[in-house]
Length: 150
Image (cartoon, rainbow, N blue to C red; front, top):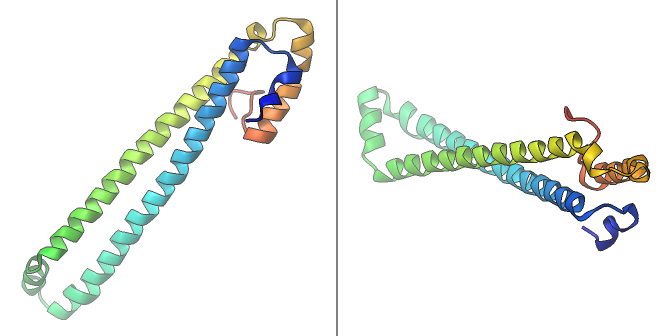
């Protein structure tokens, strides 16, 4: 964030810290959301590739379930690959939970700012000019401070 972001708005230190906090929460949530999507795609791609391999490389050529089970468990690499895929799935789920928590924290802090607007912008001039800050926050950080349900 640029140093002069709050300079011409004449806001107090508490408000400034709350706004910096909501910006940090938004950036953390965006970062986790991106990582979560990548991890989910990797896990899905891995499962898909392994399923195709098992189907075309083991199940169809085997002919019977007994031969398939023997072929699958006959190589420990299959079990390691399955373990690796399950681990990648677990990591994707874990990261998704962290992403959801970060989103909840961001929205909670954003709503707190909205609810405390009257206390944060006490002076009449500040209250009249707060829309400039709200516009900047929306434009630069995609943070809506007008309504709670956005």
